[in-house]
Length: 101
Image (cartoon, rainbow, N blue to C red; front, side):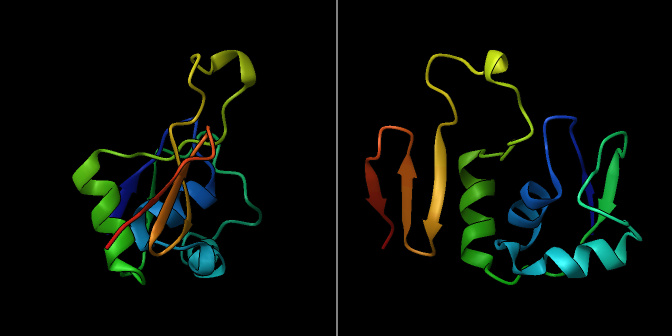
């Protein structure tokens, strides 16, 4: 699977989008022959199969694209909309937690 990247994304964002977890970090680094966490100027990366399919499906079905390589002045007033805390919960920047069942 090939994942298109953005300048506002890190390898950790790609891990979440493509596999549902950052547990795949070292696998993605090795697969793409990356010496470190930087993916600047890389337009696409190869990915492994999803580990947490439910998380990947949630991102896809809700149009969520993590992009944590952004500067404070690039944020809108709401900041980053959603952050995953575990398989069943999503917490937004106002510390409101949504449990997914």
